[in-house]
Image 1 (cartoon, helix red, strand yellow):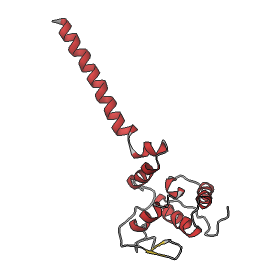
Image 2 (cartoon, rainbow, N blue to C red; image 1 turned 90 degrees about the horizontal axis):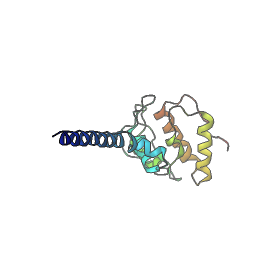
Image 3 (cartoon, rainbow, N blue to C red; image 1 turned 90 degrees about the vertical axis):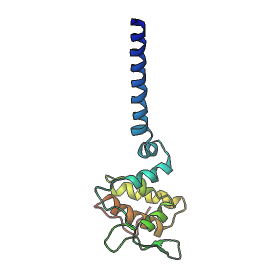
Image 4 (cartoon, rainbow, N blue to C red; image 1 turned 135 degrees about the vertical axis):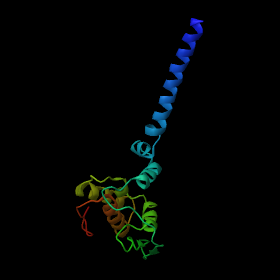
Length: 150
């Protein structure tokens, strides 16, 4: 009889560890933010969409966008100042680096990322628009000039 109790106890402990590992995997390891930190750019987009925007303003749906001749979407912001969900989505398809930066980014770091985007084929208007949206979403208090130099 004690062999059965020991086996049941060991089985219960193993199931407890398996359950704890499963919870850890789902709650910590397999999150979009964790995948983004491991280099999954698609997960970075999802993590940014899930971000609480506690320091800045969240995106809102306030209509569609139009496009300038260079492909830059507008308007970037809703009438109440929140970033336009439609413009944000268009800009994210160009994969700008500023959307991967968090609320504690520095002006120098943002400008370096913007220059990297330009070196990879982005245009100044699209890069600067992505910066403007990210600045409001993240609550950055610094500004980068529209005529920034790389």
